[in-house]
Length: 222
View 1 (cartoon, helix red, strand yellow):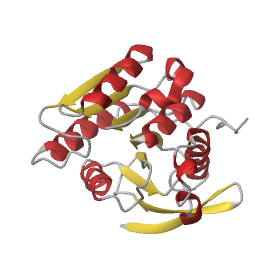
View 2 (cartoon, one colour; view 1 turned 45 degrees about the horizontal axis):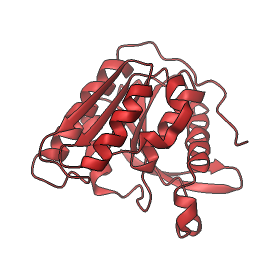
View 3 (cartoon, one colour; view 1 turned 135 degrees about the vertical axis):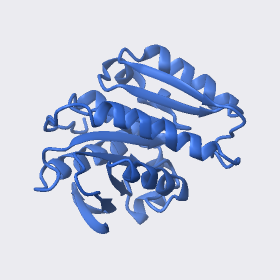
């Protein structure tokens, strides 16, 4: 079911893993946070749950190994956004997925990239942030049209506050879900399962119930 692919973005090839269940009509792109990768056990688990619900998944590294070794690059939200947009263009150019509805699942800084990309690509069907930094999306938040779910651990006090501020700036359909007893990485028993349940319900609601549309022109860096 899973296969490795390489996605062209500017002058680099990004490593990714795609998996599409039979009869899937939608796919979720995972935008990992700083210092993480497509091998993140947390995102791999969430992806497995989404596939069980009939959604395709694309887990990718937004940076090359060389780029990820540079601390500043990990927090270059503009670059991360561009890479996510490039992956979206690649997806809608593939025969198997060109008519798929597309959603974004972002963690940490990847959540900011997901929201900035969604603000620039109106056809994105839904966004979910796990322990993310949506505040780093800045003024793009008010332009997001995709229904957005922000998931935060109940014991992740600083990130809760940052998510609350970002939530107030969103003008789309939105929800802020706080998972009781969870810290930033959702390592406590049952908390990651709750993240996967919330994400699966959100994506199923907004990606599987609508007609597919092709992605609009994705953003270029200024």
